[in-house]
Each structure stands twice: as structure tokens, then as C-alpha cells.
Amino acid sequence: MAKIERKCKEVLDKTEWIAIATVGADGPHLAGTWGEYVKALGMVNDDTLFVPIGGYQKTEDNLEMNSRIELLCGTRQVQGNHGPGKGCRIRGTGKIQKNGEKYEEVKKKFPWARGVLIIRAEEVYEQL
Ligand SMILES: Cc1cc2nc3c(=O)[nH]c(=O)nc-3n(C[C@H](O)[C@H](O)[C@H](O)COP(=O)(O)O)c2cc1C
Image (cartoon, rainbow, N blue to C red; front, top):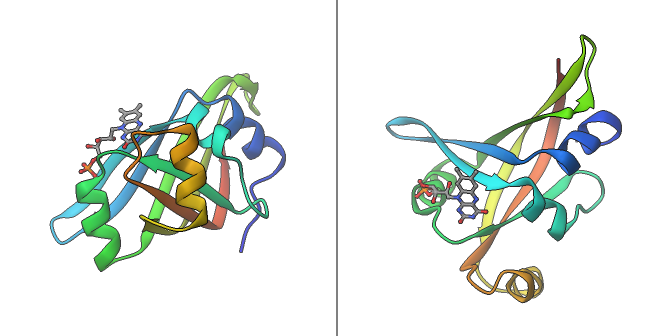
């Protein structure tokens, strides 16, 4: 397991949006979420993130077949090694929960959510 800390945590806190990649029978698939949503739901153990899901039908189908997931985000608001701008790439597994304690918590903040995507980071890489 890898921890999301230091610069990557800062990037996640400040990024406007996050790309979410899954794998389907027909190849890669991208969805998105807002950084502020992920920030609002908080992190557990510095390695588990939560995304409120409204759509994500294809993402859900893909995760049922293959739980591998990858996120990419970035912001100019964090200083990188070459100037303003840093990114973070997170690889791990994802699962969607449509009931339970976490989902009830998510619904309080995002009443439109039909579930919560739970992402467990296994590898964390800084970019830029
Ligand atoms: C910047 C951005 C943020 C988004 N945030 C969310 C989100 O937090 N929750 C959600 O359900 N959809 C969000 N979407 C929409 C999904 O990416 C879109 O519904 C996508 O098609 C996922 O559904 P699919 O897996 O069926 O393709 C966002 C899209 C973008 C571009």
C-alpha cells in the first residue's frame, strides 16, 4: 500500500478535477470527478478516497469485471520541480458501494449520489 501524503495530498486538495480511468472489455475508459467533492469526503488512512457517484454506469460495469483503477490530477497552485504546477497519479483498486455507513454519509453531502466509489491507493506517483 502507498500513502497519499506530502505533495500529492496538497495536489489532491487543490486540484480542480480528477480523471478516473478503468478498464473494460473494449479498452480504457475515463470518467471525472471534482477535487472539491473528494476533499469534502475526506481520506481514510491516507490511502482511501471516496467519490460520490451519480452516473458512472460504464465505470461500474468495468470495476465489476476488473477492479483496477487509476487517477490523475494536477494543479498549477502547487510548486513542481520545474516551476508552478504539480500532478499526482494514483493506481489501485476501486469498488462501488450503494448502501452502508459510508454511503449514508455521502448522501448527506451529495443527496443526488446513487452510491460511493471507494478507491484504495496502492501506488502513488508525483508528476512534474
Ligand atoms: C470534471 C468532471 C467532474 C465530474 N464529477 C462527477 C462526479 O463527481 N460524480 C459523477 O457521478 N459524475 C461526475 N462527472 C461525470 C462523469 O464523468 C460522467 O457521468 C461519466 O460519463 C461517467 O459515467 P460512465 O462511467 O457511465 O461513463 C464529472 C465529469 C467531469 C468532466
